[in-house]
Length: 171
Image 1 (tube, rainbow, N blue to C red):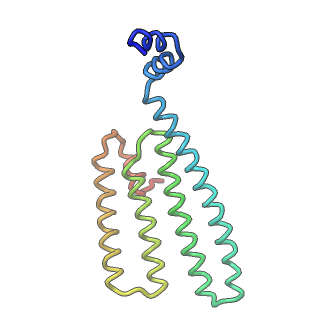
Image 2 (cartoon, rainbow, N blue to C red; image 1 turned 180 degrees about the vertical axis):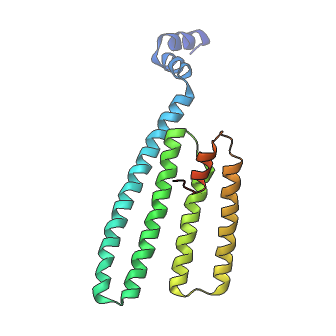
Image 3 (cartoon, helix red, strand yellow; image 1 turned 90 degrees about the horizontal axis):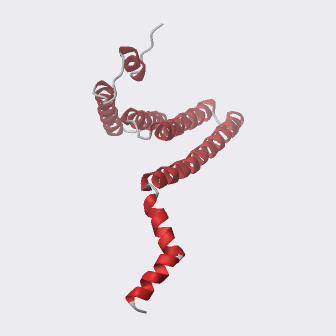
C-alpha cells in the first residue's frame, strides 16, 4: 500500500474519525467518570461489608448464652469498633466523591479508629506492655498529625469548623 492510499483509507474510514473524536474529548472527563464508577462499586462493597458485619455482630450476641458474659461482650465491642472503622473508610470514600480529593483529616480519623480498635482488642486479650507502648506512640503521633492537618489546612475554615473538626462541640 502506498502512502497516498493509506491516507485515503484513513481519511475516509472510521479509524480517523475515532481518533479525532478521542482527541477532541477531554481525557479528564474520562478519568473522572471512570473514577466515579469505580468508587461507586467500592461504596457498594463497603455498604455490603458493613451490613454483613452488623449481622455478624448481631449473631455474636448468642455467645451470651454459651460463653462467659465478659468474653461475649468483648467480642461484641471489638466487632462494633471494627464496624466504626469501616464507617470511617466509607466517610473518606464519600468525601472523595463529593470533593474530588481525599482529606488528610479523614484518613487520620480512619487510622485512629482502627488503632484504637487494636488497642482495645489487645487490652481485652491481655497484650504485653511493649505492644501498648508501640500502639500508644502511634496514637500520639496520629493525634499530633490530626492537629497539624486541621491547623494548617489549605482550605480556609472558621473557628467553629476547626472546633468541630477537632471533635469539640459548643452548646
